[in-house]
Structure formats: C-alpha cells, structure tokens
Image (tube, rainbow, N blue to C red; front, side, top):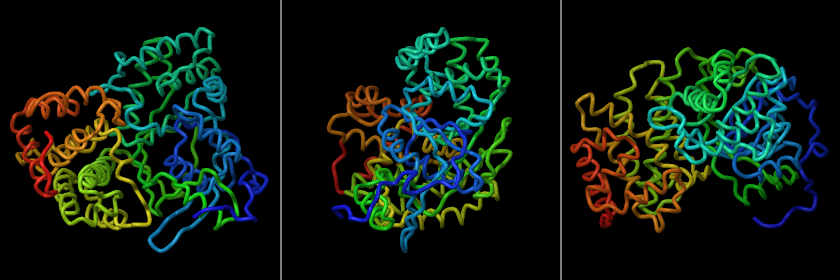
Length: 477
C-alpha cells in the first residue's frame, strides 16, 4: 500500500474529540505497543465516565512520546481476527512523555489522585540478579544510584535512566508530598512480576535512602499480574490500512489479536478502575496462572522462534504450520501440563485457544522479535519446566530442546556482540569456548545448577543434534 488518500486528516483531539479528557490517575513506564493494546485498552473499556487517564513515559528513546504527543495521546487499535479487522480509537492515554523527563514523573507521583504506576519495560530492564536482588554490580544501576542520590539532594541532572532509579525518584517525591501510598503494577512476562519489581525498587531505595525504603515497604503495594495479548510490531502497511479504513492519519496505530487476558493479585490502596468490567480477573494467588502463561504460551513462542528461524520461517503462524515445530510445541506443552495441577487452569481449552491464536496468519508475529532477550525469557519460560521435570524423575527433553534451540540460535549469530540481549557480552564469551564447555557456559547464563549437571548438559547437546538432523543442517556447537 502506498500514498495517502486526499480525505484523510491527522488523528488528534480536533479530528477525534474526546467526550471528556480524563485526569491523570495512572502513570505508566514503557510506552510501547503492548501497553497500548493491553492496560490502556482495559482502562479505556472499563472507564466510560473517563475518570482514569494515563500519563505514559517512554523507555530509552523519546520517539513514541513525540508521535503520540502530537496526536494528543490518541491512537487506533486494530483488532485483527482471522476474518477481518476492527478499528477503534483509544482515549485513555492523555499524556505521552519522554522517559528522561523525571521532573514530570516526580510531579505526577506527588499528586494524591495518582493511584497506580504500571510498567511494561521488558524483562531485562528490571535489573535483578538470578537470586532476585537488584544488580548493584551493573554499571547502569551504579550510575543510577548516584543520579537518584543527586535528585533527592535537589540536583535533577543527569536524570536517572533505569526503571528502579526513575521509580524511586518518583516515590521519594510522593513521600515528601505526604499524600499516601499507591499500587505498582507490572505487566511484563516475569514470574511474580510484582515481587520482582518490589525487589528492584527496594534495592535502589536502600542504596540511596534507607528511610525511603522503609516508607515504600509501608505504603506501596506491588501487584502481581499475568498478561496476554499478542501484539506484533506495527508496519507501514498497517498505518496505510488504518488511514484507508478510518480516513484518519494515525502515525502510531497498534495491531493486536482479538484475544486478551489479564489476571491480577494484590492490593490497590488508592483505588483502581473497574478493570473487571472489561474482562480482567482478580485472584488471591497469581502463581498458577502466570505459570500457565509462561510455560505454555511464552515458552512455545520462544521454541517456535528459535527452531522456526533455523528452518527459514518468519512468523509464528508459519512455524506452527511446520509439522516438526508443531510436534515440538505439543511435547513442550505436555511437559508443562504435567507440572500444572490446578483444575481452574482448564489446560485443554487453553491449549486449543493457543493453537487457534498461533495459527492466525493475519497476525504477523515475527519470530525475530520473540527471539530477543533470550537469557531473561528462558529463565522464566524453560528453566522451571526443565527443573520440574528432572525433580519429578522425568527427562525434561522438550524443555531441553527449547534451550538447545536458543543455543543454536545465538551460535549462528553473525556477531554475538550485537545480539538483542542484555547478556550479549556474556553470550559472546561463552560462544568462544569449545565443544561441551560452550554448552555449559551458555547454560550457566540461565541456571548454574543445571549447568553443573552433566546429564542435563548431555541432554541439551542431544537435542541440538536432533534439531540439526531434522533441519538437514550441521551443528555449529
């Protein structure tokens, strides 16, 4: 598709007036497509009176804030089902900011009406170690400790650049304003994501102000969630499609699947929207639901990404249509299902839904996108299944196959130092090792105990040989 139709006008508050601009009551860190297809959609749908506006801050770059700011926060959500598209303009985002604008973040968090901070920052950006502590040895974290200390001392430059740094700086402003607590809601694919967030934030606060840490422990609630909505990257063709269908030139639409799921467990001391009216589910224990999502949907995505790329596939739908890839997914699901005992999870229906969603070829969920940040993702998606299978006296061959596919993927990279992974330097160092030592060192990046188990190492190498035999290629490890 090329060219703009003559009738199209720019999407903004003039071309699409809001019935009412909601006041900012939610502050979001990580202004990406998933947030706009998920929490922002739930808020828009659950808040017809427009009482819960979202102010969202970007991560590393200001680009999304510049585009959405020019559109007054408005954007088109495209629900792409197997039989067609549905278009709607989302109104819940009322302010878009550069993440580096920590002064504005502090100003908002000092307001009593702001009740929630939500996060979609990707797994590596939590900057926690394998044992769940803030990684104070990271240069990013050590730099931000100094920056947050400066902010608390009245010097706002340079601004903190990490989530723990920015959020602690904001919460310090809230404490100083004496306006009470709020809830922090992580929407990233991490096991116990609320508790991971809590560890990162408390760790940063301890480094800069122990009294602030104590206040956060008393006043701030950290909510665990399980989130699900496939949201591929928007293309130029999607922008053109929206324009042709709506006669609005939206520079930042979001394309997503009709399916969505949001399960939450935690407290909201300052209130929240009625997200349950839009289909969100509130539970006492998030763990069974997050495990189901991580070990079935997310793990299968990673397996399809690494094995599918090796076999020349570009999207999830293409990879699932490959009989070998589909069989490997089913075997991985069988292992995960053996570790998930709660009948409320309805695993047969969940697996059937996943097959239908993955097969939706109109959602171009690109494997290269899923393949990013493998070290962080596989620690949550593959390692628990492999450990659980081994502890139950079973082989864990399907989970080992996923890890082997990741190892082959990074080994086949033209330049490991440029991999889209926070541990790229460690990966490059491991890849320089010969033979089995390379497998051991790569596995240690995911789990040191598994790396010390000779049987597991041998199992992963066996699965790698199987992958190469099925693809008709020679192994590179």
